[in-house]
Image (cartoon, rainbow, N blue to C red; front, side):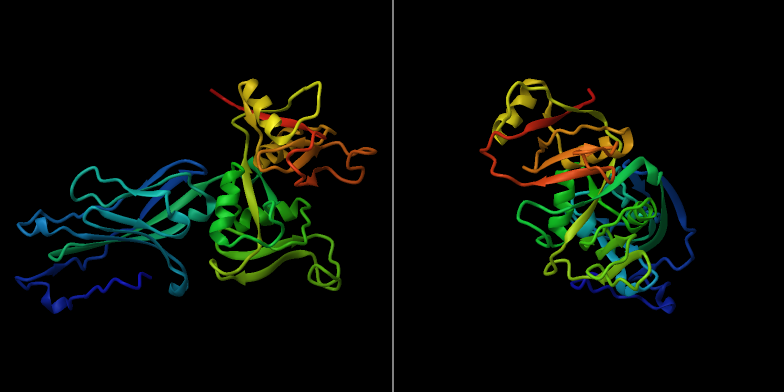
Length: 340
């Protein structure tokens, strides 16, 4: 909870006082449904009549509730014209503000991890309002793909905020546990621990072995638990949704440096593809090409949906070559053209 806010709860015996009144009657829980990736408004309003003390302003506190209150998440604090958002909600949550007594919030780019119960508190000194809202998110886990990611710096170099940004840079979101579990049930096996959207660090194992949690353990998702979001360093599991555009190999007569690859896509009225694009094209569209090419993060990868000799013979996968010197001319490029 917010450490700098001090809220005085006034006893029920003072409700009739001329100095302050607090709403005490139970307020029905509001249920809101949103589609994965959409924007949604969670309603909250100061229901009492306006008063001559309104010009003093009020505070709005939004909190995402957990079964254990120690894991409640701060969402938004507003005091007058000043607003602050926190954690996963930073930069994604805004006050609706359709009128002076509206404390509703808009959550943009809704993820599965946003699902849950929220509490809205409006504190204006005369009438305090408490409202609870349950957000349900519709989303088909088969409409996207989970992929592990680490930056050019190497493995285990991301704190939580870095992980969020790393996925965003690849046109993806940090995966939820449900998304990782679905990927594991579909055969995902990865022996490097990565952040999930709830702040835990986990990794999926289908083939138990000594370096990956022990050869005697059953297949499953290995869980390191919640880690320090600022100090701990891991990889990240990202989740990319279905493509909203066209992913393709750009046919070129010559191999390209990284800068030449970027320019070649621009010359074709496109952009150099991101890691999220290649995974979505491979997993959701069956894209298959045995040519290694540049991607936006400076990595070289190629997607194989039909395993064959010299092209990922043992498994369908997005093959990772590495982060080579950007000045070498040994690779082609994958481009992405967004729908207009």
